[in-house]
Image (tube, rainbow, N blue to C red; front, top):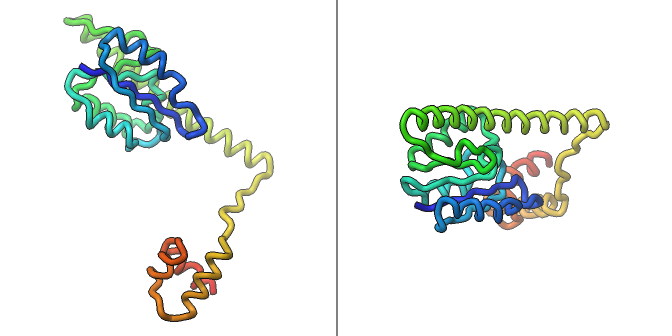
Length: 196
């Protein structure tokens, strides 16, 4: 058995390893063998590189250890159902450090009841994490709107645009070659040339 510790933060500016030492210490109550997966990726995305690696590496009976449900998921209910199925298909046992009912396994009727309760609690916490994320985003939008902030979008790179026009005027390169030479996408070449 391996304890697979998953820690996540949404951006590089946040410290994903903040809880790692505590989780490593906690993992020794299950097994001394652990692997750490530290990821900077939004919890609103189902397909995350290190989470995918963890699921690929996992074997039947391993433990997936997370600090809290929101570190694993801020997914929609449909996407969270997919993630739970992936975890179940790999035979992983989900242990959430701040959810004590997930820490032990009981057999018989008590174990079955506890598993149902844990599933409901994890679903509830995942839903709350998603709602919290949605509310935060909405408050940010409202705050920006109330402040009078108007997004201006990305400013055009006039140097690259001029280079695109210059190369296109020579009539000896395809739009794909121009894009590669200037370091932009082909769509940018088409857009610049359409604008004249």
